[in-house]
Amino acid sequence: MDFMRLLQSLEELLYELVSWLVFYPVTLWRTLTRPRQMMRYADVELGDTLEERYKDTLSPPLFLLLTLLLAHGLELALIAHRDDGMLPQILRNDTNLLIFRAFLFSIFPLLMAVRLLRRSGAGLDRETLKPPFYSQCYVAAPFAFGVSAGANFARTGERELVVAGIVILVLSLLWYLVVETRWFQHDLKIGRLAALLIVVRVVVEATVLLVLASAVLSLALGGMRG
Image (cartoon, rainbow, N blue to C red; front, side, top):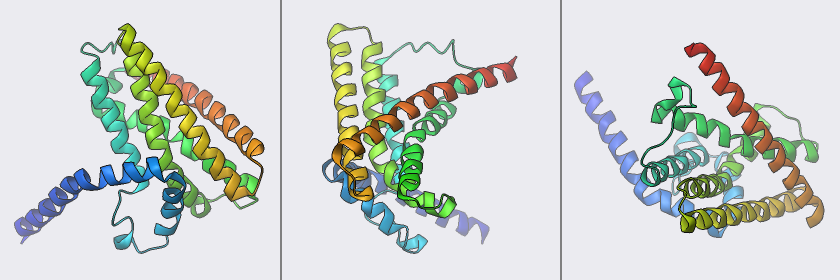
């Protein structure tokens, strides 16, 4: 009986994994072409039962994680000899490094969601934070990939790739700013300039927090190693 249950679990896992080959491109295309609709879709789907959620797309956190996985794969392909000397021992493992980066890039959707709740006057708790955070994970994924890809192209040191990396990074940032500005403008019923100022502030805060969190965690993990 246990063996049959194991087989059934493996069948479900295999189907889930291969289904990503279909639903990841679908989710990515919809997010790039209809970002605000996808953000609203994330809110609506959370109201369904667990089995009915995100049946024709990937869930937002999974989409973000898989996008970072692709960015990590691109890094491995572009940079043959990655210098891990400055990383703590625990982060020299690809799996741990991916989880660490997922945590860092989750700061952007988290702060965006918190700022929306604060500006709208809604209470901040686990229930109210979840819908805007899920919405933000959809648009944070292409932004995270663009930033990671741009940085990795620049790290190669080849002039053409460095220029391409800068272009990718700038375009990713502009896309993110435009999407977020429209989101805050629509949800808070405020002007475009006011929404843009909110977004720029949150991006700066998230970037600073990302750098600080990365430094603190690296030092802490390095201290544990010592």
